[in-house]
Image (cartoon, rainbow, N blue to C red; front, side):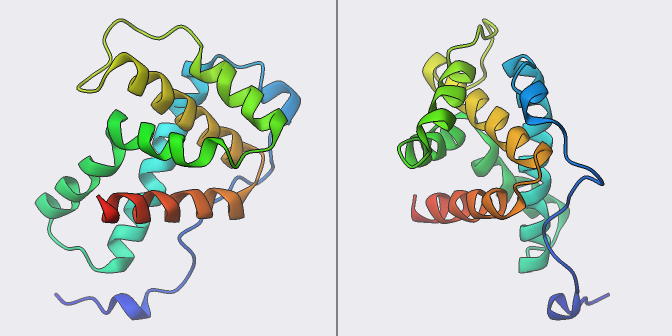
Length: 148
């Protein structure tokens, strides 16, 4: 069955019914925030991919791998870090410097730490209702990976 992707209405954004308290969010462990951020990041990218017309389960999965690897996320972290406000940089640094597991996938320990911080940042943006910034971050991720 052919789906006209141009006729899919709605947004690629998703949101909570009510935003979480930012002061309490920052008290959560980095890995807890990264757990949420990982899901938000991947769902956001998946929505963009489906609306963009990538079809076939194998192609969908394969196209996502390049975006969700610790190497790709570390690259995005490096791109956005200097553009954050000073207080935001402090938060992201604390998440980057948090204790990480001894198993960190295919990337380096440093890449995993930066990817964890990025995922925590994604969770923070999502939970505090900063949807425009989250959308911009996802678009930047797509752009960076297309340039690679």
